[in-house]
Amino acid sequence: MTPPAGRCLTDAELAGVMSAPPGAVPEEHARHLAACARCQQRALFGAERRPEARRREAKPPSLRRTLLLAALALAAVAFFFWSFGQLAGGAR
Image (cartoon, rainbow, N blue to C red; front, side, top):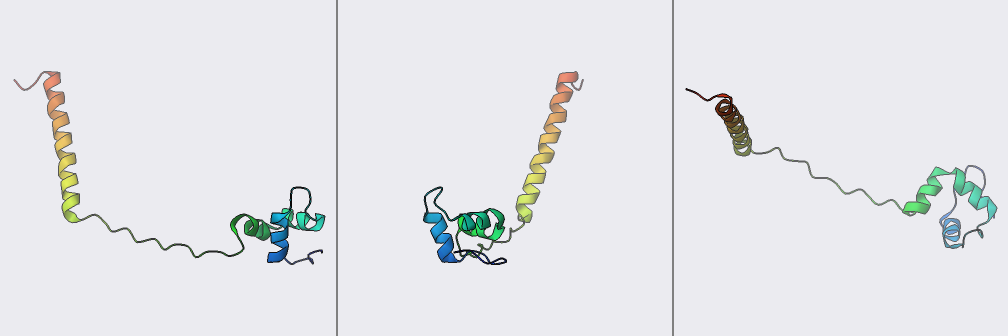
């Protein structure tokens, strides 16, 4: 059974190819599967495409959390410069 030019393998033909042992697939089907990206995708991932799961939109962080992070970053920078000043000779 040869797939006509311009036609993909039917579900039955594809199932036959997938269930056949290696080397026992009809040559016409093997050639078509080697050349047809759509049939390769159907063979690897299934005949039916599942709808993609919708992603929830990411909420921006709250203003309180943003201000807390900014304050911690500022405190870390201030501590760095204070400790650097202590190592360099300190404030006399």
